[in-house]
Length: 555
Image (cartoon, rainbow, N blue to C red; front, side):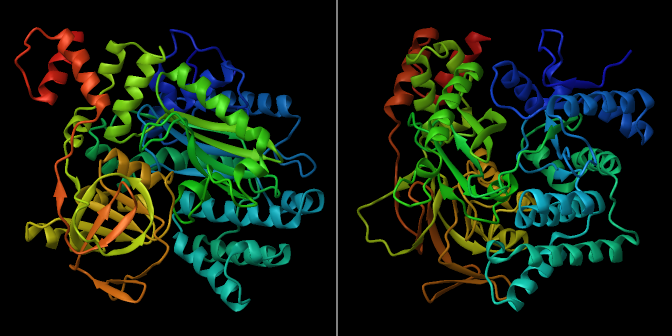
């Protein structure tokens, strides 16, 4: 009998085909085996996805397996699908063999309906219940039925405007209940039927929608850009929801086990109190720095024990996976849950330091380290840096999401970038937030600047992967997309005007600036010495050729 589902608790053996359960699912299984705090769940494998595409429906075997695994979660958690007294609420997430951050769809809070929400409002809090409900209505409607997020955002923004408020946290439960009713009316108007109340229908529809997201435009573009085979296959992870928006002792965040910009052996990350994970990685909100200590709501002050716990977990995961980890987590009522861990995207400088340190710390050996070197990182190590002997006019500062220095002409869309390319000039893409739908424009631009978003948003991760200088969360920038200009402290910069991004410092600089050659770091020099011990030809001087030849010898 064909097996389509792998539970997190099932053992990982040599017989398990990792490509079938995807990178996310495979790592969750390994972390479950490490006794880390992982919410219960299972993976529908890529074989089931391929069969669904052929037949356009799920066979009886898969449906039966799905029921068995859902029942298993219910027994382990003492929660039940559709039971208002103790509801099981789920997330439905994608999982490819090769990570594609933000390109595939996710649906959170699956299993909610109006009866459950009313009971949650009585037992927990009205704000939490209706905040979670309105999130689910919007995400389900957008992913399953392709209703534009803008339509829901417009309802929310108009409500806030009418109440003379600026953000959701200022609303009360009655406000959110009213907004949820407006969302439900919008769904009914667009789809011609009421929003589904049956949790099992919601799960079924969500699985199909996540599978179909493999063929969305941004996912196809991302695979083309990164040379990922189109037939790699997609798994779907079903997992019990934990709620970072439950109360003021709850949060969501992302951390790197080491600094992805410098390689320093210290966690770096971002978080938002009373939030869900999509708030942090979406880029729509600029989150808080997890290393900040001065504020009253600093992470280490609000969650001192969890700060220590997450530090220890990050070290354990580095040793288990042999690389810096990018870890998504949720805190529900002061309890830590790990939702995902994957190899982090590092810049060139950080990657050389990390590999050298990992060898010194005996996490990996020299040969393993050399195999992990990216050739474009070697090229990036010699790119110019800012010449600090000149006088600079700093316009504003944001978050250094991806390093490098780039001077170029401002553009607001792919048409503007193409026009700049025709002039044989460099382009800097300006966005409110680095939405993953802009992957094509991001790819052909030379630098990226946003007014919102943090260092750990999906698109900031993509920018690092593309080796593009990127500054996010430059909050002083006011963007006028219609007039195609930006205002920074009363200075107007129009499309095709020149600015410079320093992705190392987060500074946005007026005009074109001078750069100077970059000296290779001591870490890269040490790695080159390892290579010279492997290759026989000692006369090669080109760093990239030295590393290529050494890697070839190790194959």
